[in-house]
Image (cartoon, rainbow, N blue to C red):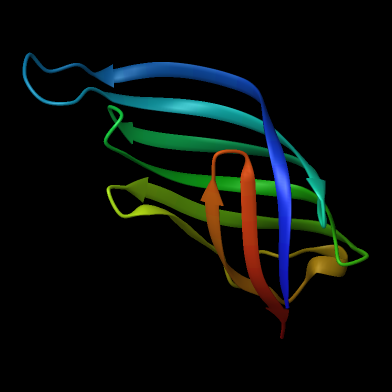
Length: 117
């Protein structure tokens, strides 16, 4: 199954932890989001960044997907090739237990190709 949803960033708390004289700085950023559409709910993520070049994130989503409610963890990242992600197998709870999938994130939208095992 596939879905598309939109999201809005509602929180952005950045804390640099490495600021070298040369090369990109490294930061930890806590990000909150609100999802709307086929995936509706809220999330909280922690991102590790390499300046504006790349990031890796763990994001816990709490909401409703395809009429099922629960939580799941989405791991995602970005670099020159775009933004990618996947649902961490075994992370789904409640009605989202058994959720698996891959995601593409772009400027306020997420496309999720998913299934339940």
